[in-house]
Amino acid sequence: MRELVQEKNEYVGPPTAAPAAPVQAPVPAVQVSPVQPPIEEVVPAYRRVFRPTIRTSARVIAITSGKGGVGKTNLTVNLAIAMAKIGRRVMIVDADLGMANVDVVLGTVSKHHLLHLLQPDVTLEDVLIHGPYGVNYISGGSAIERALDFSPKERQCLLDKLAACEKMADIVLVDTGAGLGRNVLDFILAADEVILVTTPEPTALTDAYAVMKSYSRNSEKKDLKIVVNRVYDEAECNEVLTKLSRTSEKFLSLPLTSLGMIFEDRSVMNAVKNQQPLLVAYPDAVAARCIEAVAKNVLYGGDHKIRFGWKGFLQKLLKFS
Image 1 (cartoon, rainbow, N blue to C red):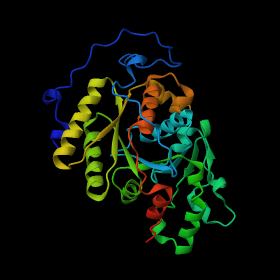
Image 2: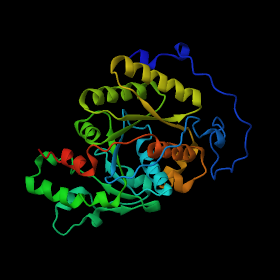
Image 3: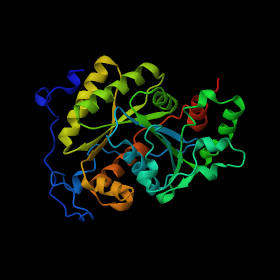
Image 4: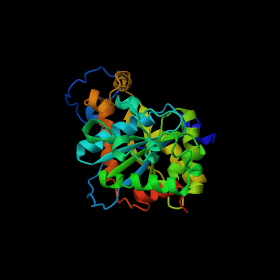
């Protein structure tokens, strides 16, 4: 673990090409930190063009982190909006049982959650919240945590009502809790894909490695990607990825795929204070452009095989044998 958080003197970054001539970009509504690069440097140089595939089942992507405060929920909400702007139907499931904050970022109020679906007169539409750009949101509440206490009839009731989500979404983003609680691991292992969010802080890297280690030991087929949040330049992101990749390959035999980086941006905090998603409040901000690039990498970055899908995800969580 010392290797993971050691000082920069052992890292030699990859050679970088000379920067292109600066291009005038529109000024965001709120001034960003002066250490941030200009807008035109945000889009990763490695971005490629892929052929989108036709899907018959929704992709279920768990978004998790090793510790709180790294921007996981903020990324989840804005990633959903970025995908919706491209034309995808996206649903968010707030599965952070300890600190459910999706509704805060969206600026909405959740009157119902999954547990209310056990009531005969409550339908799926009753628990759905419609957010910006057609993004749907549903609060998990304590339903998943109590899954083992449900009777077979109650589990089947939840499965039947939630199955309709598959027809409403191309992609389901599951915002898990932080760390390695039993419920967090259940969500991660039930999803087809996992996005791990971290920052360059040593504590965040150490906790991110703990998630990688647990996922590597418990997952049969591994599909883990990483997003480095709150970086000040590309070199800092490359250093984080190098540290995690070296440690992961050496001790876990787990290859890492990077989805990109998100630069430190004051606009993010301003959007949270206003209870508006960043891509709605400040769509031209540096961090917003970064998230849009990450969204395109998620959508078009390679071949995505759906092993469980939405129904399989629910069956695993609801403990169907």
